Image (cartoon, rainbow, N blue to C red; front, side, top):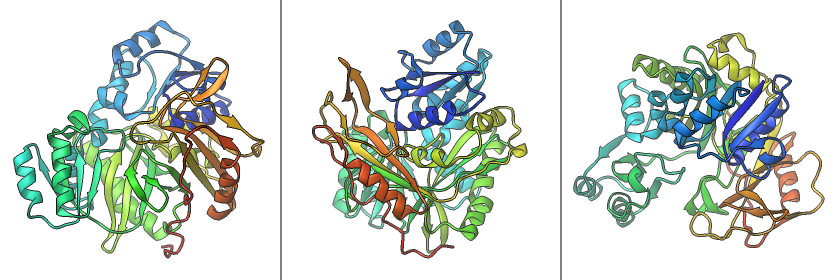
Amino acid sequence: MNVLVIGNGGREHAIVQALASSPKVDKIYAMKGNAGIGEIAELVNVDYCDIKAVGDWVDAHKEIDYTVIAPDDPLALGLADELENRGHRVFGPRKNAAIIEASKAFSKELMKKYNIPTAKYETFSSYEEAKAYVEVCDIPVVLKADGLALGKGVLICKTREEALDGVKEMMLDKKFGSAGNKIVVEEFLEGPEVSALAFTDGKTIKPMITSCDHKRAKTGDEGLNTGGMGTFSPAPFYGEKTAQEVMEKIMIPTMNAMNAEGRTFKGVLYFGLMKTKDGMKVIEYNSRFGDPETQVILPMLKTDLMEIFEAVTDERLADLDIQWESGACVCVVLASGGYPEAYEKGKEITFGDLDDDVILCHAGTAMKEGKLVTSGGRVLGVCAKGSDVESARKKAYKNVEKIRFDGMYYRTDIGIKYRDIERE
């Protein structure tokens, strides 16, 4: 079959690479893709947030048998609905289910209603009311823009001054645009974090292997929040006991809660979790594969990804036995100097002799006058597998040293954290 993949980042490159190895897939198209994706797929220059334009393009290209929607924005805008209503087969939740990520207020209210463990919170649409609350609430505190903000709409405020400045930045200065019209002020929780993704068809939910993201821009968890500077899999502290707790108290209740609300979720549910002294709690939901979590999860998948996608679409996920490789995978993100704030594009990327088994996931890359150049803040994900996290990270960093572009920077500590926490 011929498959269209929506998106243009490292996550989408990882998805395209996995689909390319499927015997069920003949040809892949990507909208809009990047230079790395373009080596595997035919690139389509259509704005994937213009859902009518995407629908018209798919209608006009009868050879497309299936569409995978990877980013959050088109899901929140209803691209899955648009394509399904036109009679096309799609992987990704409909708009009324994608709200679990598109609105932080909705997700917090859902968890409260259905007793899914999460941090205590208050929601505000008024700047004055939010300011008044932050002037007296416990500190530190977490501020979250209600809407989508490219993974950056969360501020961890360690002082009251930071919290008051954060409320102003979100609600008055519109640092995150309209996403900050409403904000969630949340209790600060402490503990190791883990990304636990799962496939679900609304009837069955099957977890993937876990991973740990590194959001801060600089080594040692310093600097600004980013979309993710690297990740590793599996989470060292996440054992069978924890997995059972998450399945029984969080994953199944979330799937059932969305069904009870008339918002059946079909696709990938991403659970951002924290292991607290009171057990596992939900920090956030996403309605799709994570980035850069996907870059370490899919290389470990033994089952045909296309088979999983179709099983979700056809609501027969219960019949599929999803298999994973043992060992570990690490992804180190190479970023443009200045990211996540202002950065320059168009810097030529050069490579030394990379190891054959290293996986490169292009994120912000493009071809210009026959040369590979930077075109985004996060440029490349250098991914390596090993028998354990330490061997995988050594291989990843060995190959990072063979890549160059002007202004390139990366964290040097991906895969180190949580190694001393007891596995449960």
